Image 1 (spheres, rainbow, N blue to C red):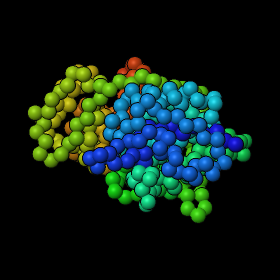
Image 2 (cartoon, helix red, strand yellow; image 1 turned 30 degrees about the vertical axis):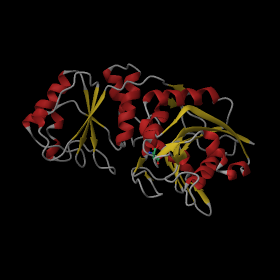
Image 3 (spheres, rainbow, N blue to C red; image 1 turned 180 degrees about the horizontal axis):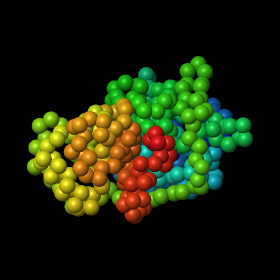
Length: 335
Ligand code: ASP
């Protein structure tokens, strides 16, 4: 029987209404008791709960470290992991784990639900049971078929660092616009074997993150000469328009040059969720070409942000940071 660790972090899946009617996380035993079908699975489930179940909007890099350490400590003991997590920051956590645990050879499937587990129309049961089924699947050598960090939600298994939360009220809450689903579960389960990530290198665990990453979103009407230039930014993510475009404004250029003078690496990441940054495609990207800008290519915003934090945590030289940022480490970009 496959042995799968079930790591409970909180989220709507395990919430109930408190005395004033607000949703708040329950302890783990109360959650698992509400899914009797878990006991019917031919899987040996090892339950693990984080110290305090949280609403995932409380997620922090130190909890990512706690999760990474939990996975690391169980790595030789179990065949895979299912993580229960709130949907709000699930995509960020998926990115963090995919960069903090490289060279993964076991499945890490993150799931949650839009309605709490005790509610009649809940989506929790299907999500949870299917997440376990994917975590327990094996290849012809009896190794875990999935060897990467995924999000399972509403009949789709997505690469975690390619996904983002697209809806707060539909069951189909996640989307992976730049990479196809790895598997779909309907009456039959279909796995796109050719898309699965298979690590080449050894297991490499990174537990340091550096949060000195700034974000500036461009919009028509933004007053560029009032933008603060913060000294502590090691990386600035610039959320540009379309294929990576920005206005040709001298005040904006001055802002970028001052940021660069502080030694901050500027990253061009588009506000579009689908498609890629294409430097130099439009004349309107010419301001950006006057600084040594990095392109986030087709990474999601979540992926670019968390990847910057993890790479900064490694204390790399600027050249190595640039090289790794633009290379696919865990299938997060098309290179
Ligand atoms: N606020 C909740 C959370 O992210 C939402 C959810 O789980 O769907 O923890």
